[in-house]
Image 1 (tube, rainbow, N blue to C red):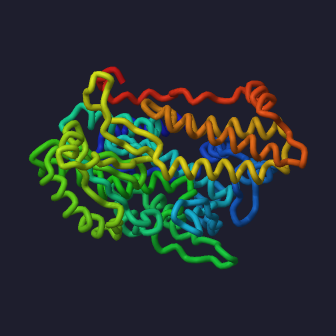
Image 2 (cartoon, helix red, strand yellow):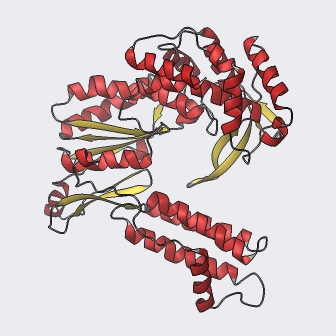
Length: 441
């Protein structure tokens, strides 16, 4: 099966205009479904039917044969997704997720495995979100080197309001049909999009949007924004600009850089109309154009102001200097993200202390701190990482000593325990030095 998918990707790369008319048999193939079952994690939230991977696997071959048969007859109908919420800054209710049933996850992954090679061949380099071999760090690295080494004087921050809730299904189908000519694939994806959401005991119809939490949702969102934004910028906006122009997108977060202020203003003027044409809205309160680049610091100081900063993918970008006094793009953990991470750590420690032993709690805390550092411990951000580790360590000491009336640790014994568990050091883990040449990347 992997050979067939590789062949699909090769055809897509060789002919960017090719429309694939026979793909559905790959989706319904038992071998592909079995491979999807194997790679899906077992300890994840369950859907409305409550079936886990372990339960589904007790009669795996019969279940897969039955699923394949229903797919081939077009008798497969996805169940409604279970609504769940995760914390979101500024929202009392949180960020809404749609949790699919385990069998639906298998089908979603099967569709993704078939479609992904086709679209990877045509996606723009400016798109980094949820793509093989790309990450937030690669997007940040490209952005930093562009601002550092190119003629960038202005940065436009923009935000799409409720993209995952408002993405129009009609436009989604039209975008898919540019490359997918198999109507059974289109019909299956349409059923997935309109499967509904179960919340508070009622199933709500989904007439728009692609549920966050779905395996297929990141790919569909990339397809939607590829046609709605990426191609528009590369084929129209960039050609209209008098100076240099650059564009970076990760999922529904995007940023643009311009040499000339007139180009930035023209882009901002056209952007709401462009998004509105695809049933999307621009969050005006989160959209602005700032001066940013090698001359921004001196220009701001001449006006008696501080140089402006912008936040992208959890990092605040600001105009710094090298040891030699030259301009350098620097980043630090945004104040909002740092506070959010520390609050989450404190809440976790408070709720975990009565339930697990001290050694296990130390090991779990280490995993959490390591996860934070794996993302935020980048070039020029050591100060914020040290601050996070400092406060997280003290929160852990505080809550471990509240397990009972008798203190669990003194500072000396606590530091010994941290050494025993291998407490992570706030050292730089990701090299994102924008001053190095792109060829050395």
